[in-house]
Amino acid sequence: MPDRGGYVAAIKAAKLGLKTAIIEERRAGGTCLNRGCIPAKAMIHASSLYREMQEAERFGISASDVTYDYGKIVAYKEETTDKLVQGAEQLLKANGVDVYDGKGTLLEEKKVRIRKEQEDVVLEGENIILASGSKPLILPIPGMDSERVLTSDALFAMKEAPKSLIIIGGGVISVEFATVYANLGCKITILEAMPKLVPNMDKEISQNLKMILKKRGIDIHTSAAVQGVTTENGTCTCHYIEKDQEQEVTADYVFVRGWTLPEHRWFVWGKCKTRYGARPCAGECKL
Image (cartoon, rainbow, N blue to C red; front, side):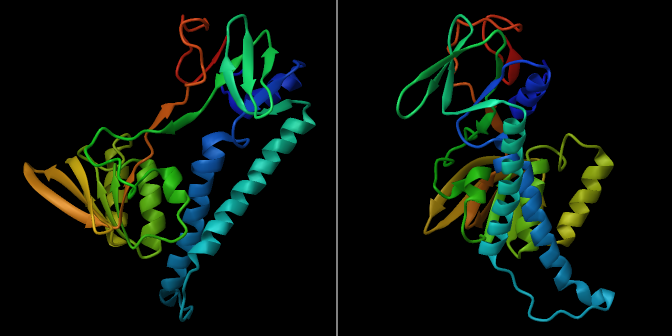
């Protein structure tokens, strides 16, 4: 079986001749397709087109009164995601994979219980892949429980673009969201605890990216340790320490960059052994 789980592994297993079933609580494609990479790229494409049209004059192209309809941008994002989800569903069907809607719980003796509205269903298989995906991680910072502190899921669900946004974290996901909303005219502030933007990338990439984002009006603070968030009168104030100085910045919303935790609450811990040990591992593994 392949190391990659989810619908890709299900299709591969079916092609190898195994009787295959997949259990999905939400929609085929998981986080990346439904709430991560794909919708983010669709939003980047739409917002970048708006920014380019505003700058068209320098290419000798005149475009006056250029505006955007955020509702239609969101609709475009949803349409893009829906098409790919339908494609994944068709691939599962075409390869003879049985699809079960519900929540799967790993049991002993190579069994999985599927919780459904009407009744539970129990499946048994020689091989079981745990590909439960992930969920947003809320940082242990005071004030993060405010309704105006958003995860990527909540930001994607917004019906109107925020006028100002503080982004905690300067990784790839943060930069993607910063790009989208800066393109749409939103005032963006990025607070990154590490000494450079996108810390896992080369220094040259980080420096060039920081320069590009600053030219687009994004305010970037590195080596900035966030101490807490306070909410008052419909705005959020983020308190942080930079260069040993206490600072603060205010915006309509705070976005917590896309840190995630493995979603494993449906596993029965301590009773099921995997090839990695006595407990199911975080991520994808085969029993």
